Image (cartoon, rainbow, N blue to C red):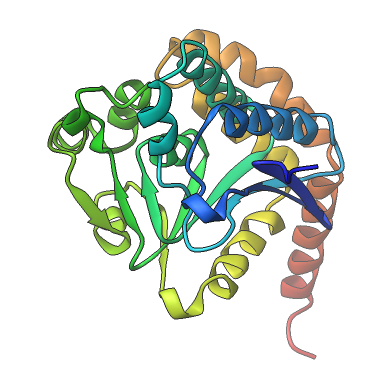
Length: 257
């Protein structure tokens, strides 16, 4: 039985979605898309998973469309709708989703990365959207990318197809953290652990509401925020924080012995 093109792996409270076609730098084909959707569905149903990491096996995150598929048959009719369903499902997960980017992150690979909530990249990673050079447009990154880095920069990247290293991607806000290549993945793991240490009820509420910022008006987002605040206040992390505040206040009032 062939290995899945994408699979999930649980590591304590972290669910990993692993892109698993290292022999072609994790390039996308139909099986890759189907397996990605299956992996996202698996993670969505796993309430014990507090945070999700997306990473690539081997030497790259994802090099984009499988050129062998394109040479043999072109883009199958079902590819683009299935890809965007999967990316939207990843975006909608009620957990923080962090992309760990090394090597090539091109085309659909970058589209996948910007559907995640946060991106950690090595300084020598190679990121870009070469679709326009090949007579295509870069999927629904035309919608996501301007929201992330602004319209002008997004147009420049999407139309020119220019490639950026991780350091430049960090400078323009395309990635959120840049780590030295020689320290990856240990440095990335330390950053992931920092996000995992945040009370996850609060993190999920923040993600949910902030994702609405460009699509809905203030009043409707406020209405949605009210029950989410109640959920946060009922979470054990808030009780622990209150106890810590009370302890610090008592220590200050007691003064030096």
